[in-house]
Amino acid sequence: MQERHKHFSLKIKNFENKNQAIIIDDDEPKISKQIKQNEYQFDSEITPWFSQKTASIKHPTIRFHNEIIEFYDYICPTIEEHRKREQAFMRVEMFVKEYISQVDIQAFGSFKTKLYLPNADIDIVMIDKSISAKELYKKVASILMKSDKFENVNLIANAKVPIIKFFESESQFQFDISFNQIDGMKQIDEIQKAFTIYPEFKYLLMILKCMLKQRDLNETYSGGIGSFLLFQMILAFLREIRKDYIANKKQDQLKNITLGEYIVKFLEFYGSKFDYQKKRILMVNGGSIINKPTIDDKFSLISPLDPDYDIGSSSFKMKEIFKIFSNRYNFISNYNFKPEESILKYLINPSEQKFTFIKQN
Image 1 (cartoon, rainbow, N blue to C red):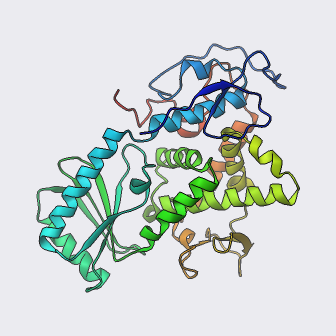
Image 2: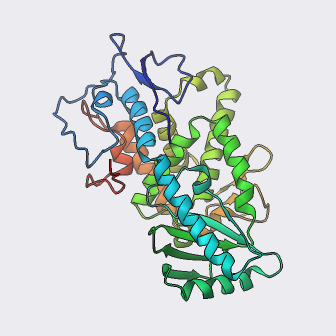
Image 3: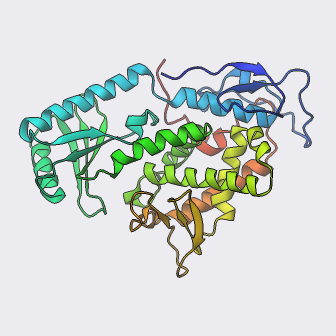
């Protein structure tokens, strides 16, 4: 599905295309800090995305940039992988419509953008305006629980947005269904627009998704950061970065920021700079950060679709998450990486065990 990015020789300065990998020839910049010459054990089960070609790049900043591109190409679904999900979605749609013919069933979120981890849920919304969301929820729950086409049907009725989670038996893909919620559909255009404006966006998104998933911090209903909230957090960060560079008359330097530097800046922004107890993020009208009416321990990010909806307030593990961001920022900023060593593994596979999302060739 994804195009492979070409490697080419380039100096760091005047770097504009975030979609291209960099490889340094004889003009490699001198590294200011000393790196211990310890032998690095190249392990495809720990870092299956990491090529020997990228491992051989001496400059850690450029190696990190290339590694991020390789990880993105590795982790994103192939055409065949996505086709299997589409088939599972159609089976679910056909089954439900046998019982509730008037319901409109739409996919949204990462399934729609094709930016999801290998074992990610498939988010769908069922809409029937002739009945309430609660009534539709009960009808769908009843037919799913009576069928052997679905497994582990889990009713989460007490969430702010009630959902049903289940596995489709044939594919073993997990689904999340919401009801009469059109916000997810409205997000699609905004997401596509953001990817156009910020070419670095999709890389940050996939790395941070994996980073949160590896630590079981990727579900809103259990206090973590869900996909929609993560998208808005990245967007807010990128907007603030641009505002800061423009305010300091450094906008020309934006094109020189590598993907690794964007990741580090994100970790620094939320891990160290942003005071979530005192500040809240607004996403409307170009985005802004303002003072909270009162100081509290809740993360606050106001939805761009509903000024009365605080997307961040349900994520009650944000203190823990921001501490992780701070810890990883300090580590990446200060660690002396060995020659041929993966840098990304310290963010998304810190235990150095077999990578969770190994793909079959």
